[in-house]
Amino acid sequence: MVFKRLLRSAAAVLFLFAAGPAFPQGALKVGSTPTGVPFTFLDTKTNSVQGIMVDLITEIGKDAGFQVQIEPMQFSTLIASLTSNKIDIISAAMFATPARKEVIDFSDAVYSYGEGLIVPKTDTRSYVAAEDLKGEVVGAQVGTAFVDALKKTGLFSEVKVYDTIPDILRDVNTGRLKAGYADYPILAYNLKQGSFPEVRLVESYKPTIVGTVAIGIRKGDQELLAKINASLARLKANGALDKILGKWGLSAKGA
Image (cartoon, rainbow, N blue to C red; front, side, top):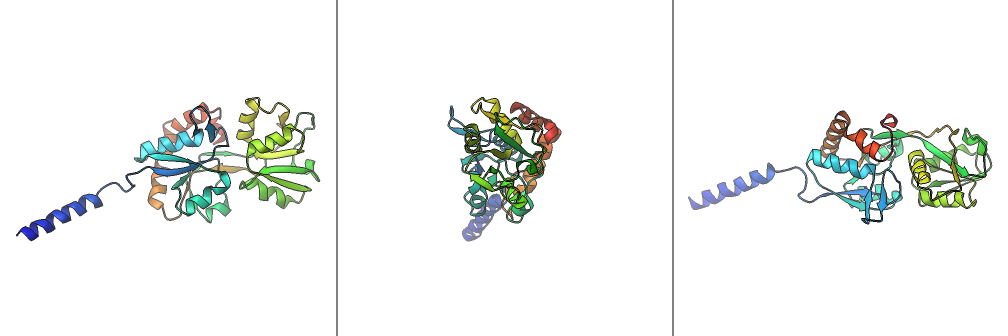
């Protein structure tokens, strides 16, 4: 009788664990980047990564029932960190490109935009297309969709690859680089801060590499993907996403 009672108790404990939450008790690790304002950036006052994608994944976690732990890392290491289980989610200014979709899964769309073009302020030409810079040396950030797209055009004498967008801005600011391509909202936000006074964002330029930012999830984590998409849909419907975008100076019309 005692043995049977022990078996029933053990079965009850196993049932409780099986019926518990699907997510681990600890927070899910979210890879994000210290450069990429307003989507993500290092807040030197708090020494933490902040921005649109941090606010968004935090709100999604609250809605879906999991906590998040932001893990700062370089943009080019995000996917490798996800596939090697060092992180559980990517929440950064990452386009859901076909090539990336072969390696990881993405949530529904968060925000869509194209590339921006920057040149020194002394260059007043109204550039419209990449062809206007044929034969020039231009720059783009490593790991972004812009690098391969620019190289494939065959228009430029060189496409220099930079670790971060501020690195591109600095070289354009000092005149060491003819032109740079990067995420339009990130360029616009950086220039508004006044740190690169000799750089001009070319408003006449028409982007051709338009993409959609989304949250990255490891292939096979279908339950997590479904929960993120369900929460994202609710945040879109109740206006919470629009408020997050507005907080960081972006219009919801871009999404």
